[in-house]
Length: 355
Image 1: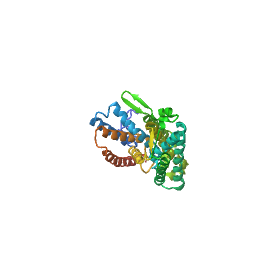
Image 2 (image 1 turned 120 degrees about the vertical axis):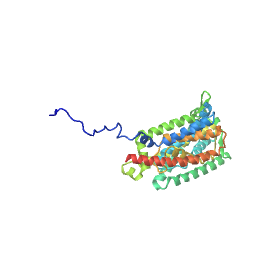
Image 3 (image 1 turned 30 degrees about the vertical axis):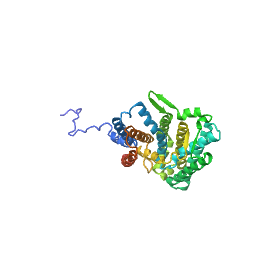
Image 4 (image 1 turned 90 degrees about the vertical axis):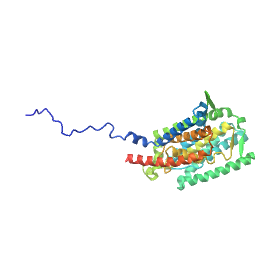
């Protein structure tokens, strides 16, 4: 008789489930991160130019491509938030010139303190951004069309008003305006670190990325952005204030344009009426390279910042390597096509994992 306390082992022992079997594999968790492709691309570009030219990793070289990427990065982060929310802003580039022109005209030709002029130009930017958002929400027109109209209107105003007031297409002389010293320190100071020269715009870029990242992943508003970009009817059905969210996103791109305009104006002490025209496409490309889909609802502000970094490294790397700068446009075209393909694949994989 067998001992009743003895339990025989099953003929086919059951192996314990491996730890983490119910969690996605590491590769799956990485793929759902929109900024993965941008991070890998940045690493490839960094290694390539570090090998091709020795100036790329010098302190001065590093500060140069960081400076190149900074103003693009500030705008790319704001544009990324808007694209995740399902909209576009083609007036983002010309807004950098418009705000700088308002500041310069008030400070130089109206005799305002630079800080008051900056405040007025900020109010102008936020008003235009709110108007863009309001028209898109109320009419249902594509933001591509609405902001294209704003782009043309602002470009015409920039040229017409500047020529009317100054007789040229440029406003200069802001260094003699009251308040320039303190405003210049905030928006255009240069910090020396050894041989490197770090511009204030780099610090603004880092700050903008950090704030936008926290806003997107740690706040209810961030959830609203993903919701309205993913499915507007569904977002409205669950109580998301879609109109307010979209209007605030357009105001965000206008605010970023104001920062970039202030940085450029106070650093170079002048502004051209056609400044910023065409850069809106680079902002969108940087956001797409960073993982944003053109259809909305998916993307990363960190990825957009990395996308801007790729721009800066590639543009200055080509200069350091003494290549024809025309090759940069070829690089942009290939980069955009590759980014769209990779982002679409990542988004589809992420959607399968959520199911």
